[in-house]
Length: 461
Image (cartoon, rainbow, N blue to C red):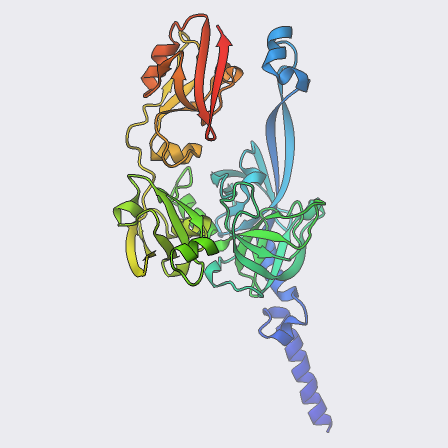
């Protein structure tokens, strides 16, 4: 009897020791706590302190060009102010590549990274993208850092346990637990509706941005980026950027890319609704309806037409333009994707080349000189690359404002404005702008297109 008790005791001790040195392997072990997982993953989650210089004015009244002209430029002059940003990051490699959110570090002039063992490193952004809200940092003089392995986020399932690790409100590294609440969330976490996110109910608060969302094995599922809230605190609806997109950013950063390159589809699409599905004879509303195609689109070249429905990309179901774009982005420029297309009752798989947005026709970007009415104004012809860069509509042609410059901004111009007519002269190419604005007379009238609206601007020389 004593021997049996001794054997059982030794088994309990062994099980306890094992639980302290490995991740949970069963539901029963998970119920005992997440300490082994956190112990493994937490050292790879860092605190980020960023210094951002913003332009401000001493008096908001004098930021209006009218009051500047009336009272003189001495009032309300722009002054730089320093804003400190606090966030989190995740170490992705032993040699010091770290991922965080663009809104945390993308415009920072000084970045300091602090690890859990209080080591500090200077860092710089080597690749960032505002639209995706991802920034890849490289730590200076770093080596042998603990890092997290990227999990294939396509295999994440709703209902999985998840942990969020970060530095909320600057109180120090904190862990919160929850589950994966949803997948393929689009248009809910950012106002531009171009995101693609994993949803979790693990508490995410200010300062968690850029932190890790991990599974019960300690692998990285995603990067925490935003929440839906009315109070500013967590309401259990948080969003993370999938690890597969992070992996593509890391790949491009290691390749030396200075800006993130996404495949260009040259397509506009819309979500499938029940009414559209009924009109197309579909039993189940699914897929993305092609509503427009650029003449140079690789999808058009592969045989896609307006009215076709794209249901899958590389075998993965897609139900929104953002989801379709995500699938192509993670496949990477230079490769190919297979799109499943529905046209009536015909279903076909078509191979599409993943290319950069073409630079044809030539943009001929032009900066106006001091001998013109708007010196410093930068204009460009429109091509697919310019459309992507400035967020123009797919069918846009003509000449667009790249940078209004000081005088153009005072006249009311903005980046992305399409110049249609200046002083009665139609604008077709950048050279037309230079010609018309050289000795234009005392008055200048500019007709532009902005966000689908036609606007007239008038100013005196």
